[in-house]
Image 1: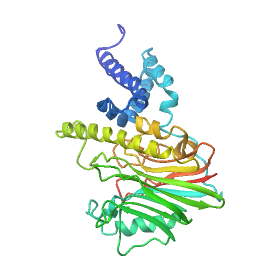
Image 2: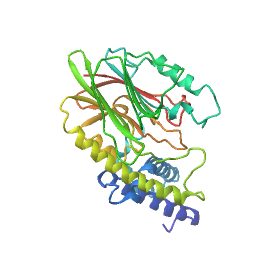
Image 3: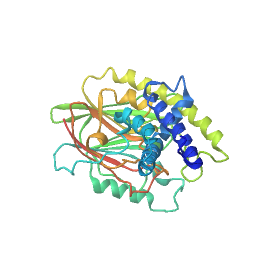
Length: 337
């Protein structure tokens, strides 16, 4: 430290704080938000912490300073944890005749004009039609009067009988069973269908865990309203933990093949994700490329997932980040059982 300039000493001080923050984040998958909701907020910032610590390594490397060892060591220690941020070698799009699944939070097809464009609903429907997935899972669904999808089978679960908003699953395969977990005291929910594909019965869960209500245009940490934002996030993460426990209990009763997908409103660094992915494969980690960003925010947030059984082959995965018709980006995967 004696050979460092005053500026470099200050930089190393910041480096130390952010390196320790990343180190603490490695514990997040094992700490329930019900006990420490404030820590859960850190899970949103892990992508930023990984990127910044990588930049610190590069900075000290250029200056040939041994201070690079701090962030290097912490990044290496958490390699399996950090590697979910970015995938460098995705699989090429496959012609494999498997099962294609799309998940898309459509933000009610822009019902309340968040985006100044009257064609959003039509754009989303046309995009979904163009991809022609076998299964389409919608979150923040709204029953449209004009635009329709040509699927023989579907299950739509609205928040209330006289409401047009909720969750929906469209399927090319016969639905032999369907249901809702009817999460309490929330407008969010988890629904499921059982389909017949060839000789297999496959259960498909559509998730929409407690919303963070993060306004991408108006709210940011560090602004005047950040205290209210943090308080709301803490409460949302606690509720997510409760909802996750409801799902895990429901899942125990199903012994067949399954797919779990949707909007988790949480990252792959969280307790919620760790509990749900426990015996499953993350399609993005198997076949994705790049950051896999699924939420339109200023840093790479991946909060939408498609999870499959461990013995399932993931043939391809795509995140369509040019589709800015919602605050989420659609994701699509093809799998073989």
